[in-house]
Length: 161
Image 1 (cartoon, rainbow, N blue to C red):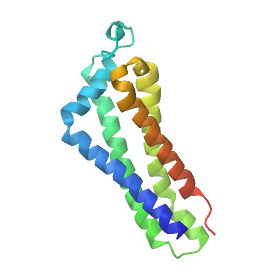
Image 2 (cartoon, one colour; image 1 turned 30 degrees about the vertical axis):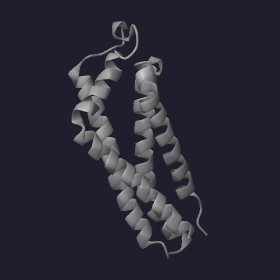
Image 3 (cartoon, rainbow, N blue to C red; image 1 turned 30 degrees about the horizontal axis):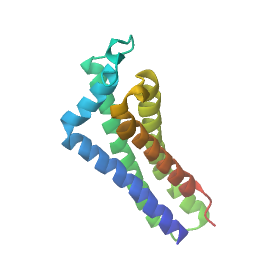
């Protein structure tokens, strides 16, 4: 039952990545607008006048591409990982542990994007923490997602006897 629980949680992470990427594409203007708002620092007083504010479309689209690629990679890696884990659910502990690798890499991709992209770049470099408009929906969500995915990864990575 513990192995099934781990598989279900990996499927949830896969769904988060795939649904998130799908919604980012579906609401393309919103996705681009959110990244543009973060990089231009226009959502708080004096932000757009700051030396690190950027309005470059290249920077904006690189940010969007990073988000989409990371969510898609997370979804695909965790999907394949869950399938591999499912196939090895009755195997010995070593074989099941080996089957977790892609799922754990998928979780790591998500955490790297959420921490690196949202916390390091958006919050620290572009000072998004100063934005009352973006702090909750963007930064608090990124922290929540990264924390949950990290906990899932730790649980999944745990030993199976």
